[in-house]
Amino acid sequence: VCVAVMALGHICHSFDLDLMNPVLDWYDNSEISTISKSTTVSIVYALVLSFISCLIIILTASISLYAAFGILFAVALFYCLSRMYLLAIRTKYYYEKMEI
Image 1: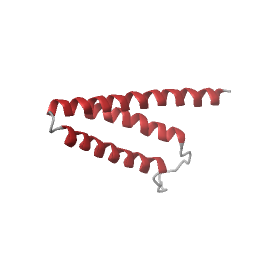
Image 2: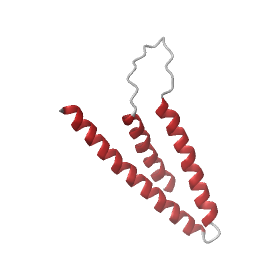
Image 3: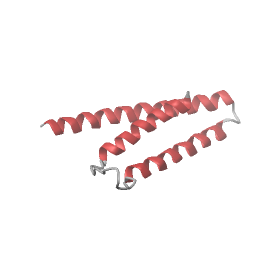
Image 4: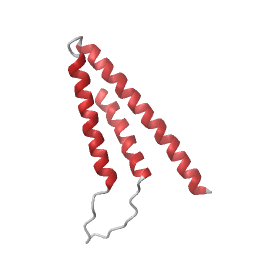
């Protein structure tokens, strides 16, 4: 459950990165497209989230395994809800700006 909540937050974060730095180049099937900058940043964020999750489990597992996953779930839930909130605000702002 913790991984799913963290992954949902990361999906929102990645979508937010694409919204902030869109790549508007169109390629036909014969051309090779390059990886956008937001893809690389998203991969780095995923690795950082994995490292932080691992640290939380290692540092708190000595107390209790239930406490470790409870803390991890709280961090994942906070991350997910904050990224969903920020994505909703930015999406609303950009689409209002585009409609005017």
